[in-house]
Amino acid sequence: MFQREHLAVYFIMGSNNVGDKDPLAVLKAALDGGITMFQFREKGSGALTGKDKRLLAEKMKALCGQYHVPFIVNDDVDLAIEVKADGIHVGQEDASIDEVKQRCPNSFIVGVSATNVIEAEQAAKAGADYIGAGPVFATDTKRDAKAPIGLKGLQQMRGIIGDTPMVAIGGIAASHVSSIRSAGADGVSVISAISLAEDAASAASQLHV
Image (cartoon, rainbow, N blue to C red):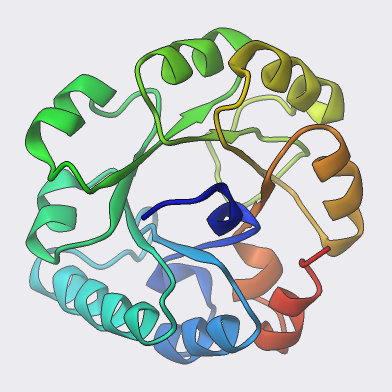
């Protein structure tokens, strides 16, 4: 059962976000450090495809299951259903919430990215379980990232979406967490802050308020 507390420290990662490290080892360390939700985002240069992608997803899901942490798949509805993920996250250019909900089990958590108040309002009205708001700050992880919305953008989204759970993403470091929560987010979502950290467990634990 999804709760907004799951958004506290939301880690996103694919095999190509960890440098020369083992992605499963990085995920285990992050889980040891207390991440509360995980999204498998296998996209971009060097990303796995086909059987290799599915096998990694299955291993990551099993690992998350040991820690009772929800396992979310980015964008790939077929894969999410195939590996019996806990949910799916879609961007504005991906399938609509209606399409996703028609295809996925009722128990699926459905998250939607929003880069402005209009997208956030539409996602909330369409029944998104949570909204991924951002980028809050500039980020190098996503090459197609939109302009940063800042803390003011988060406040505006919170004002328009009411009580819908919201997690902030984009260029976030541990020093930002308190101000991001004060702006109305239920938690922070990061990729490189954990995936490229020397000590992923320590990096994850530092993101808790």
